[in-house]
Amino acid sequence: MELKQVTIEETKLALSLLKESAEWLKEIGSEQWSEILSGQDKHGLTNAIEKGEVYFFYNNTQLAGLVAAWEMPTEWDRLLWKEINEVQKVCYIHRVIIRPIYRGKSYGAELLTALKRKFSGEVLELRLDCLASNQKLIAFYQKNGFINVGSSKDLNGNEFELFSFEMQNQS
Image 1: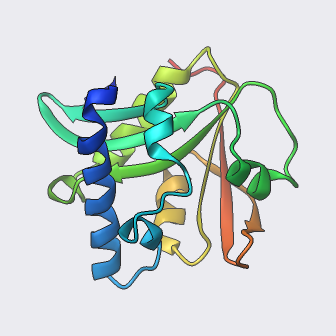
Image 2: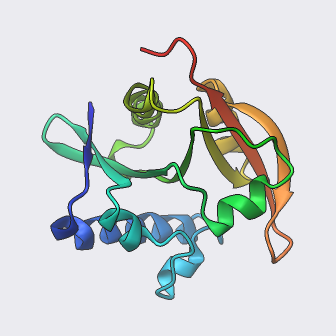
């Protein structure tokens, strides 16, 4: 399993994975990422690709997923994390995606492990958020070593849980 930086030429493929996941979420009754289906992306995946902050996750030669990771907090990150201590050298994780054919096979855990390895020695903390109503995802992040450090609301009043992973002793 490995992370590979998405190139500008691969932008359409990355956006198709994002849309694929948004459609799946809709099918299971979730409104999460619904803005993607109307052509909006609050995390600006295309811009993040241009900055080198988006990664494909491969199982050998098979594209298994995607993740965005950046060190400069966006407006979204500043909104949700404003009550949590500011730490230098933080990486914000967004758009954690495992393609449908790979779900339920521990690929999500392997993707998080690959992120921990990639940013080991570069940042002190990994941060991510998820809807407070998504108990399955909350349990998944906790099982993978992320600590729930609080909750916050977006501008629409939706509640999000905030997770942190401290990077000491990662290899």
